[in-house]
Image (cartoon, rainbow, N blue to C red; front, side, top):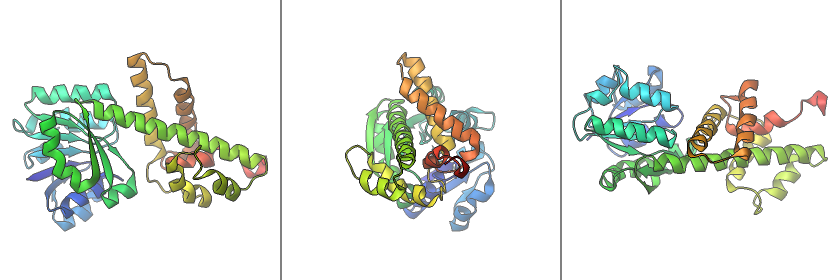
Length: 291
């Protein structure tokens, strides 16, 4: 089996590397070829376009930034989908909204291609360690066929139902991440204004029942001020936008989430987009002259 892998960013590159570790042959494509060099050096084949990639693989995995990037790589004139053979498999691990995933499932079906909607829970370090969780939506037989690939990149697969449900569950997951980070950032800022040190706040609050467990993993970043991205803030903002779009489609009010989305949007405008999403805590801190 030769796997075509599209998207070699923070998440895609280690996922592709782990597939090679598991013994799979890879053909890869990325808009910036330099990000593929390490994989090419290990034996991955380079494709000059998604269409060329599709001619050299029977399974295509996409891990790109957003729905527009997924659509461009799949359905544009030089996209892979029209060039895949009947009954071949497309696995989309990118984070997209559920209605878009259903659109891609329908587009795939019209081309005779099987589609699995399989976004992941986990950021850079779990991707590097092969400890991702896949939320897989699609036909049970198709999801089962993906199991060896998921096992090569992750530690758990949850079959969520039909195509679109994987993206739906991932959206809920990231909505909790974003709102949890926002609330803790505000608490940290308020606590410091009351005279508590970061050390006191961290040692008292972290590990308590009122703080989400993932915040512990962000402590070093918030403590040191080094917000090298495991999950960039701009992608959290994108995911919160997709959640708002889905809430509109479902006619479900989410006023709290809307406020959090705007907060991340302000941080994005302030230049924190490429930093880890935990940099929201730094964005909310007053400047030294304001303290």
